[in-house]
Image (cartoon, rainbow, N blue to C red; front, side, top):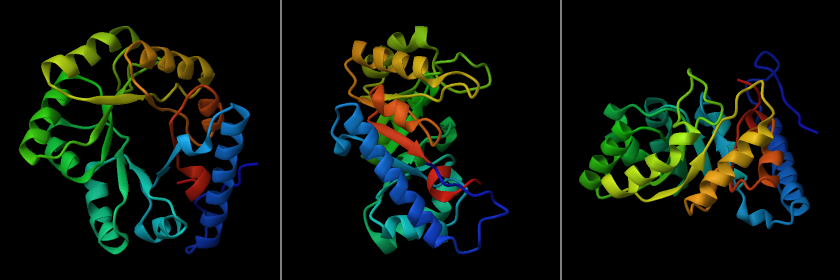
Length: 234
């Protein structure tokens, strides 16, 4: 059972609560993987630390987690260099929309960029990576629900866009990411992402958040992005 707290209920120092919820999430991931006949070590937990300050993140690092997700380049730049200096290697994923004018900063800071979704971003990342000599792993975001307000390439355009990323911009795409519509059943969206990935020879699937990561694991997720189930509600 998921334990969460609202912002008004969360004490200033919620270290014990954060640590307890992290262990609960780890147990749920392991159970979901085993139920699906999968090895739990094949599932990467991305701890979504967006909007949380370093004091909330430190207990999660000290509990052994090394993979974190942030939505905004500027916010991440304000806290992760100091955390990396203190704790060493930490794997940072950009899981929010990327503006082309932030490509240089994103390539310098992030190890994985999950939100490649249009040619302008693909081109900007290719140039930034060539300039920096650094190549973060890249995921293409697919807008599985075709929501006009949401980032991501449309499912029907995904194959062509992946080909453009590879052939035109020389990008090595590691996998796909999606965020299903809030009011939809998530399973058809996860299944669709898996089909597109297999068709294009991609092994990594970033899908599933606090409310549905167990279902995502059942349907092939290799990365689950969990925030509130660990840190509490924002």
